[in-house]
Length: 109
Image (cartoon, rainbow, N blue to C red; front, side, top):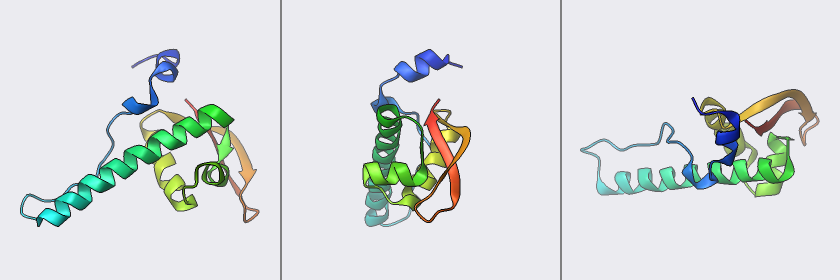
């Protein structure tokens, strides 16, 4: 497993692969095109979120969403994926969401 220093030095464009959307072999061409598009969007979201946390430091889901233009739902889904990949982690603190509820604060691992 790479050290933290190596993981932080890793270019954002080289994120590991995640559980990416796939189409079944017999699905129509449009399903394969949609799956490929979803993979590209997922990878783009991962890059944007990691870059945001590197630039602005620890943030909650709504803070990331406000600075990136992503929706809160997209950020929540992607932070879980990025956490499983070991690229980001919770700080152990909570911050208030835009609705005034506590939410996890995230940082680059």
